[in-house]
Image (cartoon, rainbow, N blue to C red; front, side):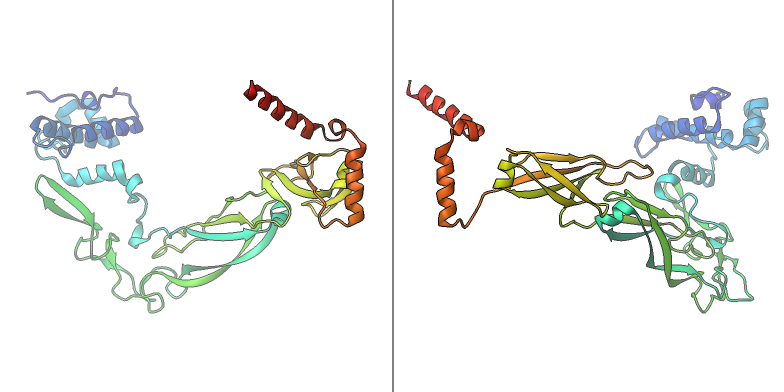
Length: 377
């Protein structure tokens, strides 16, 4: 029976690029995988055909030969593989392409087992004023650095890693499990393909040593709670000369004695005396930038009234703009009155009409009286 065209198997046009072929292969391989279709011989056969097609088309040279000669390019010793003898070494490479980005396998290893160092996290708390102005500081981070003795190679000076005798330099070993042949990292060399016969006496072959680093950190003005600062290459050193990871600094802002922050705006609650609220007046408040502002209180100010000071709030990152400052008035009821003060307040209460001096109070109780009258009817 004639073989199905490889492009038709992958449901792609002949001019499809590599990324399109890969996406099509992923979709079809997952759909027809034997684990998802137990006992289905048709799905198993289809899975083999899909793997065979992608193994050819993902390789530029094989694809060029296939485009020119078709299936004949891989028959009679032409260098191809049939569906019946498909090699699972190739499938392991395809599996890496499919799932390596999710499992973390892709790009982790390098020559002589060099691997990228881990990323590190550093938590830093700053004040609201520091968040407003910005800050330059230094931090000490316990980390690792390349070993100076072996220059990060992990091998003693004058020696070099040798080819691993278990995997013969491939970095992988195979194990058969029924239908599948699974490849995994070599347990002897941990996937490096080479072993260090004479480890460095300082780092014991790791190529890195524990070391505390002192780093300069620039905190920009206007940062908010949870802002993350990334210092590239300042994480842990890689194994055996691999690249270093990154350091991430997570900022938190300490609670302030006076101000509460909401984005670029700040809020402040200010108590004012009953007489100032009734007669009017003014008061001074500090601002987050270190200056002072005078606020005029109009006569008859009620508790909860907000005063807005435009442009007196927080800095905005990467901008010359500033938020606003909102002051909430809290009218304070007098306490511990003297006899004279009580007499004056009683006299004040009798002297005027309540609907004029306390319209909100009178309006509220008028509604209650109306409600009671309605209930009696």
